[in-house]
Amino acid sequence: MGDVIIGSNCFINSGCVIYTGNGVRIGNDVAIAANCTLASTNHEYSNRHELIRLQGFRASKGGICIGDDVWIGANCVLLDGTNVGKGCVIAAGCVVRGDIPPFSVCTGNPLKIISSR
View 1 (cartoon, helix red, strand yellow):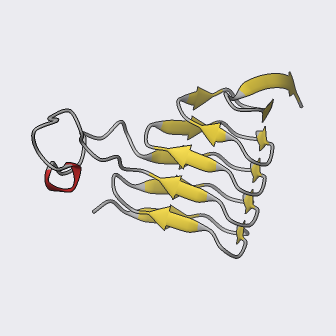
View 2 (cartoon, rainbow, N blue to C red):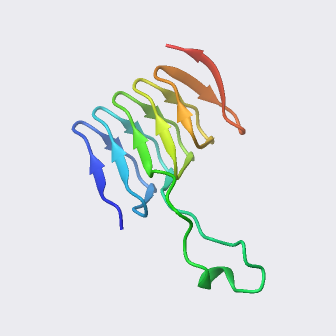
View 3 (cartoon, rainbow, N blue to C red):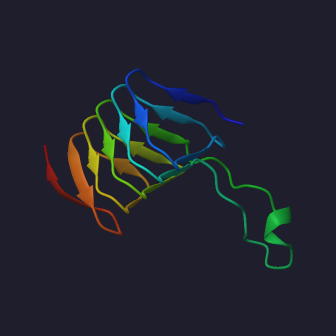
């Protein structure tokens, strides 16, 4: 399993779940609101003739990395391969995957950058 590294002065509120899978790195001064899921792994399901639970896990897309000074709103899901840049704000209820540029303000599902700070 991957490592979970949490920086200093972070706040992770109640109901959050961190799946270690391919690793999770959380920077300094990060605020994660309630009921967020950090899922740094994903099931394999390509063989329809085999039960999904028997197919194991997909290759890593790099785990999850959250930069310093990030605020993640309630009920967000961050998927394997997510890289949230320094200073980002992620609105409540977002599904996040891929690279989010530093200081982006994001909302919606699918995720959309609406401004920068």
